[in-house]
Image 1 (cartoon, rainbow, N blue to C red):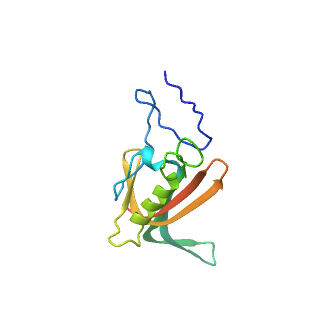
Image 2 (cartoon, helix red, strand yellow):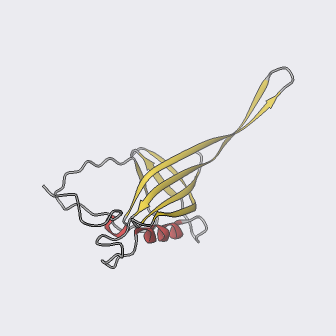
Image 3 (cartoon, rainbow, N blue to C red):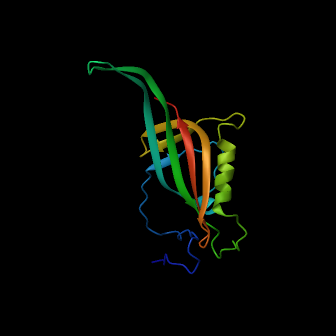
Length: 162
């Protein structure tokens, strides 16, 4: 049985050797418009997400405690993906020559953001069934753990109502 503990510094990510038995449950899948590399090249994971859907509605309050509701359809929603990017395995200096994982995340954002020429919708599948699509409109990067060389990121997708 392989040992999953390593002498690499905290914040480094390792790939388990072939033959390791792991459970894989896909809660979210983001379709790539550009060709994405493998986990070993990206060194980043998704840690959480949130999804807001909205209705375009107006409430009218009257003098006699009556309230009227006018519904004008649906509004754009917001899907936010949060994650952590890791440094190269081996040391905090990235001795294997590969860039920090956040470099690939920034490249992916810049290649797929709505302002790029020929931008297409980004598709997100929840639990393998419900597909949400929209346009990548924002990204945020936070190096809040410099001791361990991890960087948190968030990406916002303005979703198209169904």
